[in-house]
Length: 99
Image (tube, rainbow, N blue to C red):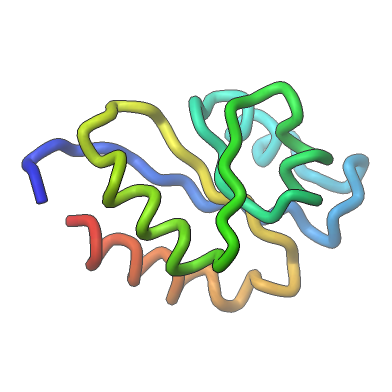
């Protein structure tokens, strides 16, 4: 992997209702260049952004980042509340794989 540094933000979008996302969560989505997530969440929260929806979320996200590591885009992964407990594990795995 190269020495390029970039930030990946993981944003929980709660149960998926647009009116329940926090202001900080929506601001974080708005600040990103590429949003990665399940198609339903992308359509709800990031329809105005460049998006990527992998077939297999964890491995697909890591593969996407590895294949595009030379780009300096700001990226965010959005996750629903049912995945909230796995976010720390998810974040750790991404950091280990792409660092």
